[in-house]
Length: 283
Ligand code: PAF
Image (cartoon, rainbow, N blue to C red; front, side, top):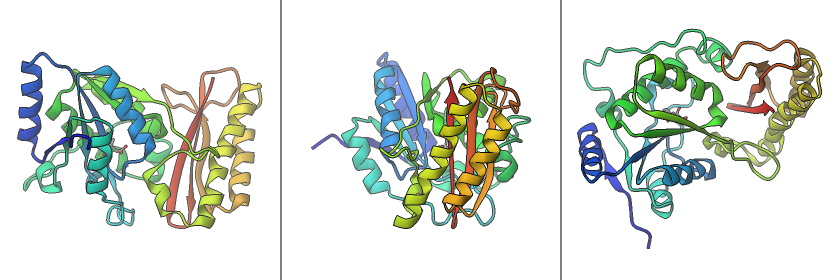
């Protein structure tokens, strides 16, 4: 039987555990998650284990990053299964706070990200990135790990985290990890479990359409025309609507309108009540 991770419920427990490891001269990595762990998360855990002596995974479905009418209530909460997966992955500790622990009575602080937070998902999920930044600032400053790891599937989130970590002088190295995909190309996501078998068949169309934009732009094609074609493909495949398919600069997230520039293809589309996102780097 693999050893269970230590379960930490309070910020003080988290700090105490990290202090004990530090006292023993050990380095610490943090992998923040909202639980419902899949192989994508586990690839982050593996990376973390190679980078530090001790690894903490946090599991917290953060109410501040969900808007009205979004899936906060139905977001999968699978703590027992998650902890078993963390044990198998050899993770040392799981920080699993309650909403009350993270947002106690009287909580009144906001974090707002200009520019990077206004485009792509920021334009379609008002307040999402501010809520995400708020919890990540709290997690980073509570644990103060040497390194924190985030998946590139949420690439805009990763860039925003890099920005505010630098802006706020948070002394933590931020590392991005590559997207893990199903054999057909669908990016792994906790939200994939919302999909019916029929929707699952359709879902891969988003990843494939973004990949074809990647190929066209890489070959010198026009980013806007390729994005417009991809939007048609995704709708034709059975998605209900497309929030965006755009080619943007990987660092500034500004729109790329001509080939030959550093670029990444981003997309978000809705299938029934499920919103899926994905992105591909243009090498
Ligand atoms: O990517 C996620 O799972 C969440 O946005 C994060 C970074 C754990 C913050 O709640």
